[in-house]
Image (cartoon, rainbow, N blue to C red; front, side, top):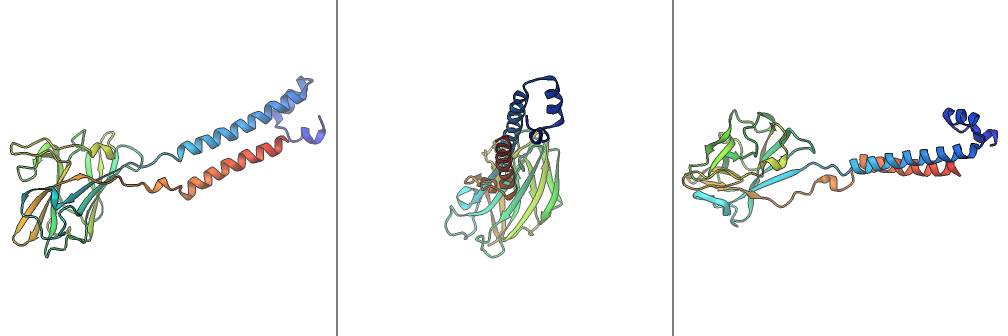
Length: 251
């Protein structure tokens, strides 16, 4: 083996060459080892890049009303005017809940006062305010809270005092053993007069009346991570560069 090529080998390879007369065998071994390492690193990053946050969306529209008089807007009963999004960030044990009231709930004075939800492994360990509009009135239990007595028994609820108006949102962090976004895809236990909803809201403040509305699973939310993120692209690029460099050194 030429001296200049020997100088490129790791110290372990040089040591082995002192004991084996066929140095080209050792050289071939280390070529394959470096290539395998590069391929392994590339595979790891490729797999890691496919780990995405899970999102669950529950939508509310006048078509889901089960009690009271619905607001005059949106005019189309199937138009969504409030939504709740559960985001587990790709992990478990902590989920971010964002409750939003959209601007198309334009009936004068209307706001969403109460929000009711379920969780598969109730009760939650805790609920902490994160951002937006906050409320100090929160219920946590197991099949404990009725939505107007007809919407079923829910596991936790938020009660606002007129602050959650159109165009505003409230964000809370929910904690519990092993919970993910999908843990909230759970139907309420029917109350004596009916029920069985993924979620329920109480709309108030308009025309001297109010409405209770059950929620439905929204259209699948496309995670932004389905489009390769800059960091993911960088990792993939490093993997390709590593393989290319290894092949060049082996020539």
